[in-house]
Length: 68
Image (cartoon, rainbow, N blue to C red; front, side, top):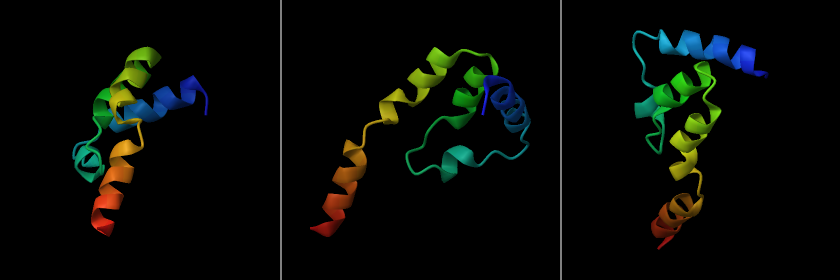
């Protein structure tokens, strides 16, 4: 997918009347904010929006705690 295609998809997502993407995300990612930055071609801000969630440690920790 190139940037132009990503921007088209982002525009469609931002027009969603009933967004459930954040609630449906297991790590409560701010998906609308990420998509807004993609549409604005602000890729650094988009990256920083998801950066705090890019570590696999919380996922591993949550999986290991359910094993105990």
